Amino acid sequence: MSTALFAFVGAIIIIGLASYAGFLLMQLKKQKQLIQIQQQHAIDQRNANIFENVHTLCMAGVQQQCDLAEIVIRVVCIMDYVQGDDRVDFAVDYPAINELYQVVKDMARGDDRQALDKKDRMKQTLARQKAESRLTETVLTELGQLKQNIQPLNNKIDIKVI
Image 1: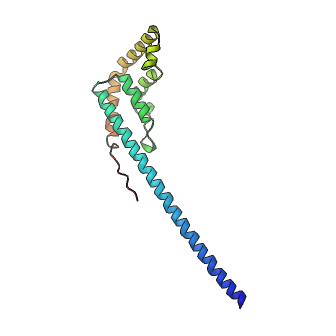
Image 2 (image 1 turned 135 degrees about the horizontal axis):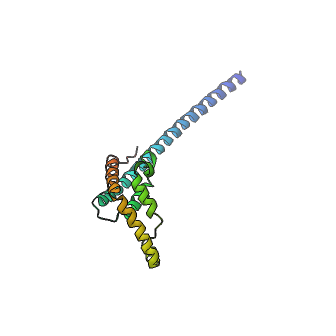
Image 3 (image 1 turned 90 degrees about the vertical axis):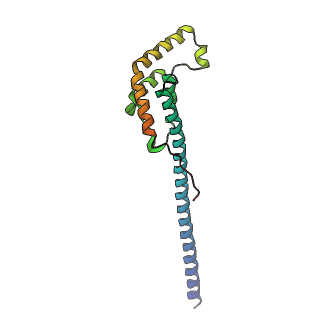
């Protein structure tokens, strides 16, 4: 009788521990889902902020308020930080922007440009101006297209704690 009693008590303990382990596994699964949802919301919020900045840059470029080479550098570099399915492949989708970026990306800017010899500075300026004059209309068109394409994505996402 005592072995049957011990077996019964052991079975109850094992069932209790298994139930508790199952409960903990369910809690862990829910926690992982919440973390994944919060990470996706954070990515969406970050992308929305990037799109807002790019939208402003595109407007400045279309209205020709800034040098096209500078706009292209900033747009491509900022869009490089977009995560997820909203990433843009400039080589495929916006070839003129990509071409101008490839021409000017390695050119000296700011204080580095001032430190260059006058001859090197003029050489870079000439190369930039040639590329800009050749690609201006197409780049402006592509900046307008990019502005329209990111407009629907540019909505602030409220993060709510679930």
